[in-house]
Image (tube, rainbow, N blue to C red; front, side, top):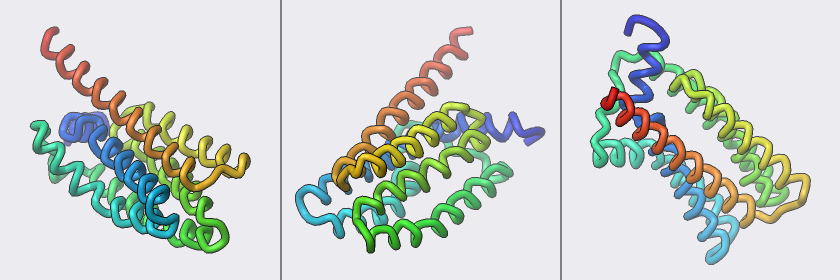
Length: 183
């Protein structure tokens, strides 16, 4: 990699703008919302945590299925991605503490934590859309908290936002690739 732009291009091209990870994360949130509604709020917390641990391997598998190569193992931005993951993991006990007070606060806290992590993805991928995604999750988290929204609405909202952004990012990736080929 010669420079930051090369590293970001490698991340974008090899991972479809990160769209598959965002979509998989959104589906994990949706599964957690179903668990919240049909099983129990406590099981929904665990569904989100366990499912969250599967996002990267599932997104990597999906990338391979749709023909994405992944990024260069020597890409220096991989280190930033890992550091962001560790930061997020260090914040999860805060959200679990919130759940001890009020279970819906766990989901609102996780929306805020994940929104903050997505802000770093703007540097990883060189896409400002991640700033919008991160800010949207943060603002929605705050709004849900201020309105006293329940856990089901909170977890469902997180899933729908991520899926919408993931689909948008994938469309941008595919359009950008076909557009580049046609020029």
